Amino acid sequence: MSGAAPGRIVVRDRVTQKVTEAVAASIIGVDRDQVSATVSGSRGALGVQLRSPFPVPPLDDTAAIAAAGPVLDRAAEVQTDVAQRLAEILGRNVVRVDVTITGAVTPIRRRVR
Image 1 (cartoon, helix red, strand yellow):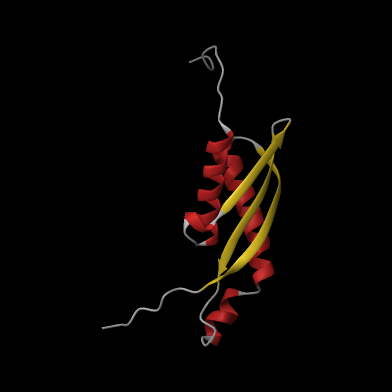
Image 2: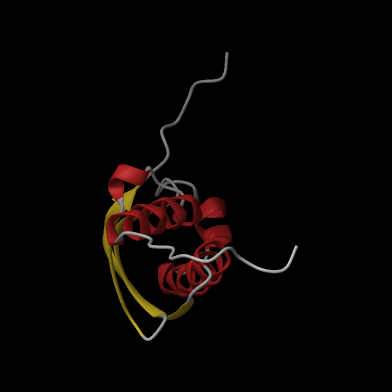
């Protein structure tokens, strides 16, 4: 096959926003409806602003807290991972990912039977 057929491909802004929210939620580890994203672009590059709570271990579990690492380090990992994953999915360069942590969520403890 010799390349793409003639024509145009348009990806609406709303699609890019929803894909960004889904990718960020998956990477952060929260429900998609807890993440909001604003995506802007120029010259083929994207800038992303994310707002989301971050999962934290139960505060009485010192081993889990130590294993989780500092929130700022995890947020920096989210920036990198979101940029890379969006570039793979959307085929556009992601030049900036701003993360605003809006709160903390802890996993629900389930009783072992």
